[in-house]
Image 1 (cartoon, chains in turn brown, yellow):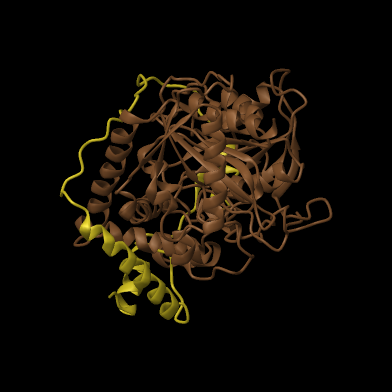
Image 2 (tube, rainbow over the protein chains, first blue to last red):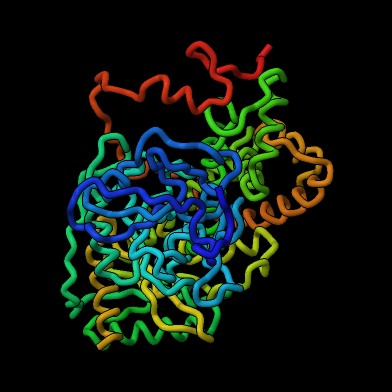
Length: 431
Length: 89
């Protein structure tokens, strides 16, 4: 198996290039849909961007894979990602970083960076990504495409390799709002095998009519750490929405102060539990069964997990440990409540919130070596995951030639409206 | 501040292993991240309420599962319908 950038895949968008044929004609006939490598594909290696799953071939399809194949989609391969979804640049892939089609010296964003690069470069028309704290929206913004993190519970996670169950969702990515919406329509089917799922399928409503819609602009989304040029570009995009008849309201989201800390405590805690299953015994590289089990597992996990995965397991184990649980995990759950309450309060007055998806444009590969600096780039995307509400990133121009994303966040189960406002913007700009 | 010994201890609890040369950078990054988490001390209120999300449970019925051979084929050390694992005792 050839890994890394090749002639066929110069951006290293794919970990495995292997065509998975459609099962029937349908709404995705003739369409290529790339699938992130943490979503199980029967008979095709699924690595999660990790050496610990290298060679793992799932014996079943994730439900979303079932659904797209039944609708006629052709899957060109499995896309590159930060190991287990842990990262914001796709530099944490065990198989080398994906490269941004707009500037190959720069990151794609992450963790669904391969999916974004595949769509932005034309290697696939659509893609499935997963979003735990921004992993669909960040690479969509950096590569200049559309990406939706659906409402929590609207897309089945059956067959998704879990990293942080209470936060993550599978979602659609594509070059246009209409394509993103079509893919969302196909994958939002009820599945009893995901106990957190609600039977509330998505019915697209893309008429572009947003007259009278009230859009809140939280001051914190334009605060410290947000690049001025990026903020200016997003303000311009909000001006376009006003021109289409939307009313904007300045507002505040005070829980943003601790949302990022709450997110990282929660996701690392869940990861420390979820990733305990990777011990090389039932699948993946073999643990040395002649050794005592602690020694065998430590050896296997140290050798096959990358540094960021081990760092997060370490933090999560600490945050859940006796004596620290209340200070970290307990407090993070209280903070998460405050984030939910902030959204509930704001959504009594406005229909939607708008702001930048990312505080900056795509950085250079290798530029951010400090893990905390990388975490801070997620500040604008994590609140939607903490509250389970839908959020889309739609391209809104460039800064110094690099794409900027406008993020629109809505009430739970109002993915349709979020997508319609994104559609109105996209059409309004083209007109 | 968390010491290198504590980081080593947590790494052992989590079975991730840690090399001698990794300890100083892991401890440094760990402390920088914990310092950032200190913002949670300012969060008002002490107890999280129960979220409105409810579990959707299915009936407890036997349904087909994956064939044993297919699943065992994924393990590197399968033998006679079992998987060899490191010894516990």
